[in-house]
Image (cartoon, rainbow, N blue to C red):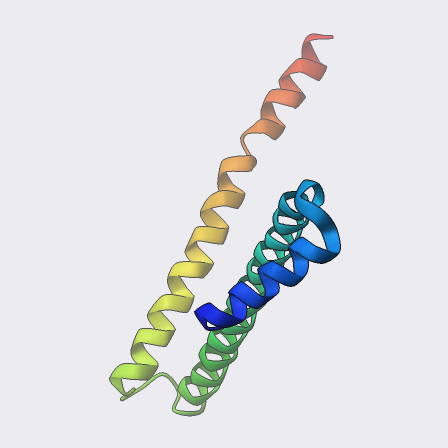
Length: 110
């Protein structure tokens, strides 16, 4: 929007809403705009992440078809990224397992 368009909107808002309610209306509209922008950014981030996951999945299929031999650098980097992700999942799972023996020891003490 240009400067003159904003001035016209301000004047119309001032006439319609009055000087008391105009600031409240401006705040409300700005909150709606911020909410819409944050929603659009989150949707954009989710779509971007899904596209990246889809690309990794396709690269993994290509790597499997080549039997993990003589991979292009792109396929090798995707495979490495997937291996790191798998390791992080197993590491977080292993951290949760030691709690189970403690619970068994407590049961034995009872």
